[in-house]
Image (cartoon, rainbow, N blue to C red; front, side):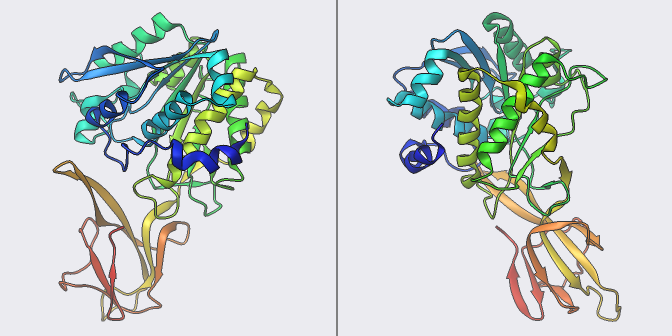
Length: 381
């Protein structure tokens, strides 16, 4: 796969109708009108009766099931899916190879109620990724019905992760993370797990030039209630994708490019036949760690008469207001944070940190500005 050539053309491939973090059915429905080669159908309905769409493309013998926004507020992979669909609509060797060898079935938004309200859960406050056994929710039943009817050879489970994750103890943000889920308590390396590991190893190698040392893998503790673990236990190689954070990219537009490449690389590896000789490289990928905050103010005093020096961690709360996403800075921790990293950091150099309104700084308080040595610092992204 010629990644450099694809990246040169990416600005023309990227779907312009999808931008930012708040992506709903209304947004993707606008994109359907542009698709010529791809069949779109309603495959079910959500708790609140919103349509759940399915899309079929390709005519190859290898069947791949892909779904995004199982968690409604994890939309980056949805945007990247439509970037891939735009590529498939064009004439190029990569698309031809994938679509001649594979048939893809794509559910772009599995949880349309959650996407509408920008929540992880569905309208019944259920995490669909913990409903694989109970199948208590209509969205879960839709996914399982497609799985049973389509009978995929591979599954790609597409998610987004919070800004708190880092790559091991490297101080690098986990911009992309992956998992080959376990299918039993022993975390056995079965044939299908090994195939998923090999796919991830190939993606990791391809991404190193794009986002070097910024790829992590999730802990593979077994939970049969999770969809990936269930499908893996049913003998279908399953890869979990997690779109993460890079630079000051809170709209997840910069990392979208890496997700796009990751999806194409995974599909290309499957289309060309998997050689599991690189599966062992999967375990060389560092594990995800909860090691980041959005902002850390270091070496600060918060009480004038107290000589104690502390670090202040600020995390953004994502709030939907009139269909616009707002990032509210809130104080998360006041402590020694030597073992943590900030996506943005300030050094107070022992000076007193004040709020603009002179209200004491304390955990859980929302704060848009601070004064560091009388310099006003804006905390919103």
